[in-house]
Length: 275
Image (cartoon, rainbow, N blue to C red; front, side, top):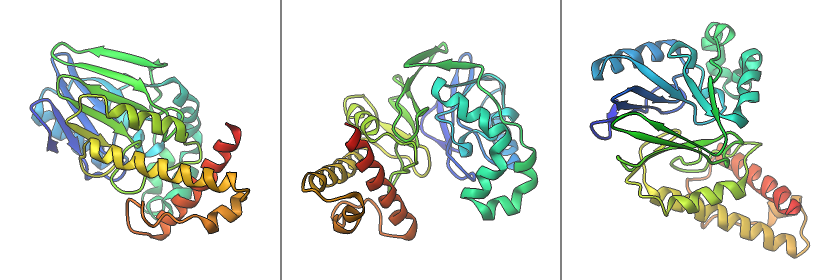
């Protein structure tokens, strides 16, 4: 595990998302969970080296399966934003289809796991904000939206650390069919006003507010160019052909990134039409 300071640790090498651990006087607070059972067992082993494995809470940053599959094997004291509950409940029956749709190779290799896994439902939900007073540490959970309707961030003021979930990653943003770009940009702007030394992204290496700012600039650039083309009377399909984003891409062009850009433009167009 990566040690950020005496109290905060992050594992970035598991299949799926980054998994965080905050040591507090009232027990461990985990952020998200591993996908595979062997990674969950490894996590518990690693946590045992840090402190007695007394898990006070597990916080889901959002409702996507790669962040919550291992939750039921860690604790039933799970916290999530209320908007994520319906989607998490759906995964109790639809998980195999979901994994097979997005990661068919992984599903073929571990289908016995995904066909039989138990999805841990949150015991505690919150709306806009929830504060956990854990003795020597206070964790502030707040709704962010953006990447998904149930996306939340976890801020630890004493350590100046923000767990951002999938709202911040290195490279191209992880856009989904239910992303809200206005919410996403509001969050990225607000992050600039929070005292943060380290950002723990949903996936990939640790970063800082510079990554958040670069993501904001990318979204603002795409949004402004789509809006200008719309004002010029150009339709959605033509915008995909007309728009040039070569000067603002956050990662080299690839098939995956091209799909992300197409989804971003289509969704921005639809969301701008509704405004």
